[in-house]
Image (tube, rainbow, N blue to C red; front, side, top):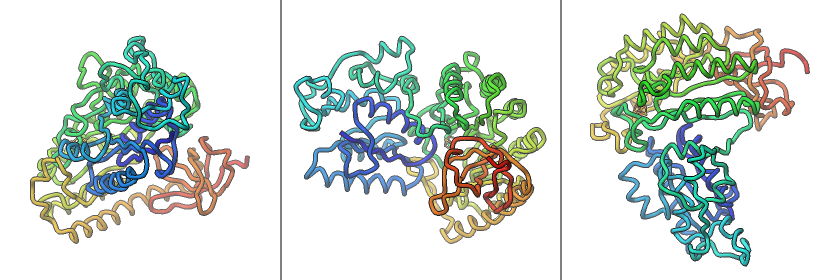
Length: 484
Ligand code: SF4
């Protein structure tokens, strides 16, 4: 039996999907790229944009129509707002949060689904001939996941295949699942879940709950394991990655200490790899974090520091809990200690009541901080967020003009930074090939995309020296520095 999983939204959902795959494949389902071929169809939803919610509704409508002629099961997880949960419960067969992921096999069984793993254990039944929904009593075995967790064992797909019954899972159990990494050289490691910040435009605290830090020894083990396997790019993920440890003050490392441990390990291996993190919150950003990045080669010189707005009054309205003065002091410290670092940001234009003058403060901030990349979003009220109760009073036309205005500003600063690399040889991680030309693609330590005028696919997954020959606004192009 086959499954098809659609992942919407941010890197956090993409990382979560790797653990969902472990659990689903542990039940014996095999992945398929084709929805039409799948018996089990799932979505990891994103509540940030209405567009994503609309996509969920259109998919489930289509899938439910298929149910007239086929036997299939649908599920939804990810960032789901309480108000959507109710309506999704009516249209999807199953709904669960990430900390309930280990209960998913049980849910399927309760629903009356004989999983492929359950069938394999039934001597008298062939998976090809069995119906998808059947008597749950036949589908279960009882090796207990909780026992495995108590033995501090990483849960592989095989463990889950052997383990259908278990007690209530929580986010720790979720982290104990060995993810099915979707790449052999790039990986994402969740280090924290949830958010305590309650920015007025965001619904994450309502969909993912409060901040919980993953034990540091697990994170370090995962980093070491990946580096041993030859991974070259590792991103530490969290909604507020630099709030790491604050929920367990005194009992857990701080974020700077965690980075320091990773840095020391990087030094001891002598291997070349880059560790990134996203996203930090300016409120919790301190000099210790920047100092530690400066100390170790494996901590990538790339900082993503969301600005959202360059106006103090709007920052208050957004409930960001930091001032422009604080943000400016962080950027100055980054420039001083990490002179080669690239700086990325997130900005919202047209937030409720944003005046021309306030928008100009954001534009000035963009000029001052000379970002390499800015993810500029046109404000739209996010269902469930506090600001959705306020008037969305900036006309769409004005929002779009503001977006284009900012794009020109950071395009110019990014272009200057890129031109400084012309003629230089820089390490680039080769990540794949361009479909149209067959040329290799990749990114440098600062996560600037690089196109390489070379077609040798055996370089994919390696960090190789590239001499930069072309600098565009948001990307670079170059050639291998030494012929192979
Ligand atoms: S810090 Fe703000 S924007 Fe980020 S997840 Fe938390 S509430 Fe949302």
